[in-house]
Image (cartoon, rainbow, N blue to C red; front, side, top):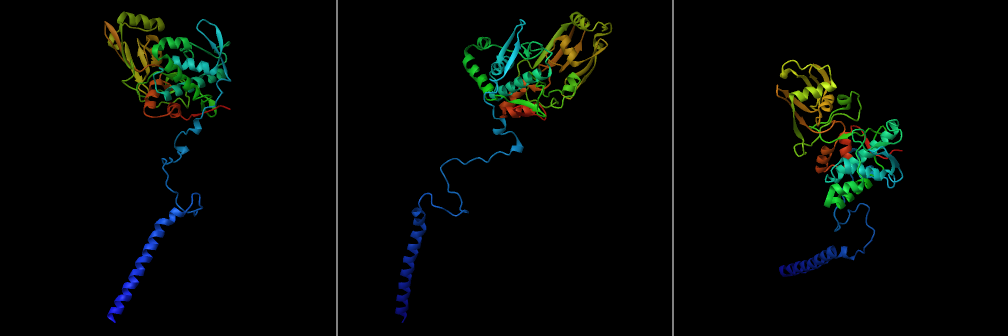
Length: 356
């Protein structure tokens, strides 16, 4: 009896082993029997592939996207610009050719490509804004080549001569910046802005109201990341005392320098950017911008001291300080920001796109 029970148990164990082997084989072989393209359940997980994972689409509300900043092919080529040159002659150019010349003249071609693109969008916006809002500024032209009035401009020949051995590479680089931003403008409430720009700040831009006395919502003060890497970022200007007095009284005849030298320059106050907003020189109160112009300083971000022998100014940055900082734009591009992010950084509340 005991032997019979053991035999039955052994037989059952053998059958169980066979069944287990069959099930195990089916478990591994069944997936191989499925043909490619066979319909699977809707809730079946996706099969792995050998390709890289697809990145999740960026949140539009979190920042710019490629679709939002797509160029408008052919837009610049369809526009013309009347350009007044330094000799008084007026030439009609295609907008894309004009923008190439402005970018070549206004920003070092060695800058990051995204900074160059930002510069091109500024130049395009400035040109269109001038044409729409200041038609009497140049009755015979839209813009001129005087950078103190409009924007600087170089022909391709002039630029190539200044670039030397890098001419080919820089020519292509600027051409790409124009092409990749074709037709794009900085817009505020749907209209092109007054896209002013300058070379470098002392760490923060100035609001338009602080420099020019008129509030412009998109020209607010913002932080700017450039610094000691900028050539000539800090400068020292020394005037012999007699030359300083002559230069200042030429513009302000009522100034009085009869007192002690340490009292010649007083009441220096600064705006939110640290630039001089007001200063009293020789008893005459003027703005920091006026002092900069009269004395030929690189910016209104300065300190000053005077002795009987000389007057010394310590200056930081270069330019009027409002709008886009070119060296700041290059620093932001170096941090990985694209041209739209750079433009939206410096022009508060604007959008980048085509103007209908």
